[in-house]
Length: 295
Image (cartoon, rainbow, N blue to C red; front, side, top):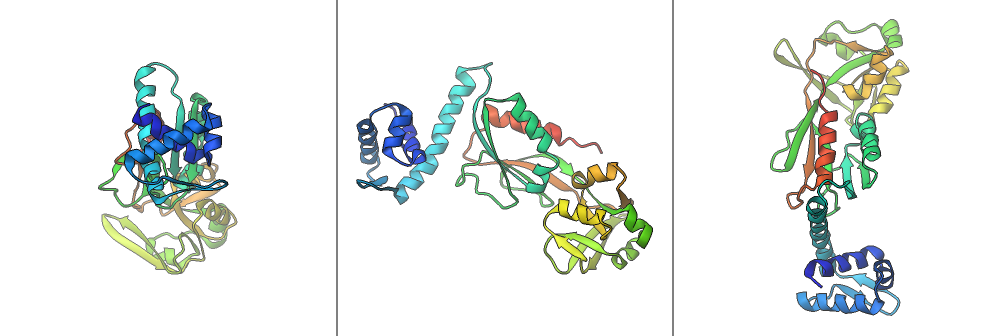
C-alpha cells in the first residue's frame, strides 16, 4: 500500500470513530486496519491513536496529521476525478461557508440550481458571518461580503453589492421623508449592527459626509430590519439584495437617492494549501455569474 492509501485509512478511522467501524465501511478485516495504523505510527515515530479495550482517543500528533491528511487525500482524489474521468459528471464532497444574509437571500436560488445541475456533488453549506479558518475546519471555499479589500489571501473578487436608504409607504405618509442629508438624523433610523451610537457615511457631490445618530432599532439580521421598516418603524440602510423584493413591489421606497454609498466587495476565498479542483471551479463560476450585477 502507498502512503496516500495509508493516510486514507487513517482519515477513515478517525471519521468513523473507531477501528471496527472503519474496517466494516472499508470492507477489510479489523486486524488489517490495526496493523496498517501501527505501521503508520512506526513510520512517523509517534502515537496517533491511544487505543484501549473499550475506548480510544486521537492524540495531539494524530489530530495534526489528520488535518493535513484530509487535504492530501482530497487532493489525490481530485487529481483522479479531474484527469482520469475527463468529461464525466463531477462528483464528490464540496464544503463552503457563506456570509449568512447574502447566502440566504441573494445566493439561495443559485445554490439550489447548482445542486439540481450537479446531483453527484455532495454540497455542504454553512451560513455564518464569522471568520473561518478554512484549513482547520476543512472548508473548500468561503464567500464573504466586505467593505475592506481582502489582501494577502487566496481570494477572487466576483462582484460588488451596493447599499441604499429605504422607508415604507406608510412611514413616508405619516412622517414624511428627508429632503436633504441634514434632515436624515431627525428621523427614526434602523441600524444594521450592534452599536448604540451609529454613524452612516456617504458621498455627496464628491464630498464625504456622515451622519451620527442613536438608532431607533438595531439588529445584525437585515431581513428583520426590512420587516421593521415595513411596519413603518423607520428608515433602513441595507444592501440592495436584501431589500430588492420589497422595493420592486413598491412596499419600500428609496430615500435620498442622490447619495453615494460605499460599495462592498463579494469575494470567494480558498486556502493557500488547497488546490482548486473541478468542483470548486464550477461553483466559483456559478457564483461569479450570479454576482454580475447591472450598474
